[in-house]
Image (cartoon, rainbow, N blue to C red; front, side, top):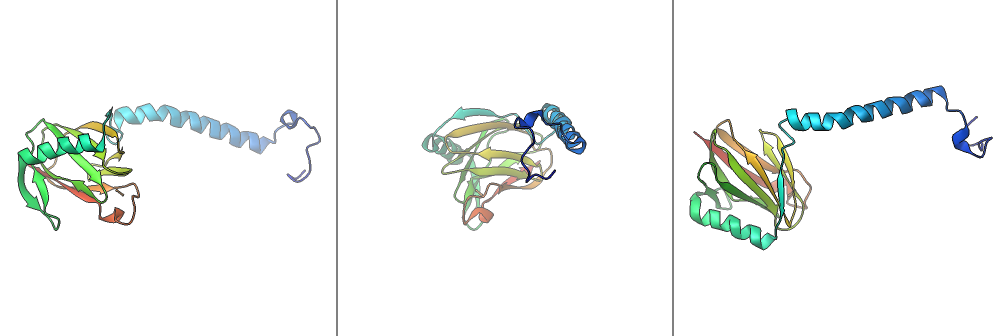
Length: 180
Ligand code: CUA
């Protein structure tokens, strides 16, 4: 029987299932179950899928909070766009603005200190990818994600946008400096 011939029995679900097909369906079902249980497992044991707190916000409200931090704690300017480098106190709330096409501002953080990272977008979807820590979070307008982050290595971290956001997507790279 080929798939082109109509089923002998109109109630096709009453037809016997071919052995190999049944085997594949069972394998897929079991694998689906395994992956379902792996999700909470990865959440607990993995470093990538952090728990986030999420709040409603607006681009204006979020930018105002970021601006306040920038005004208070900017220590120098950096790069071709003269991006402010902000050194907020250890343990404090840190705001990072995603927009077409930059992460604003740059940050200087202390190694071993924990920070509450607030992320939101001014326009549309961006992806916060912190390398080499390998943290990935979607960043959306009108939502404020908060993650606890403790940098444990000194050096220069790059924040890369990993959601395609238009012609300048590849230029959307932010900087986080971790110092002793
Ligand atoms: Cu922002 Cu891609």
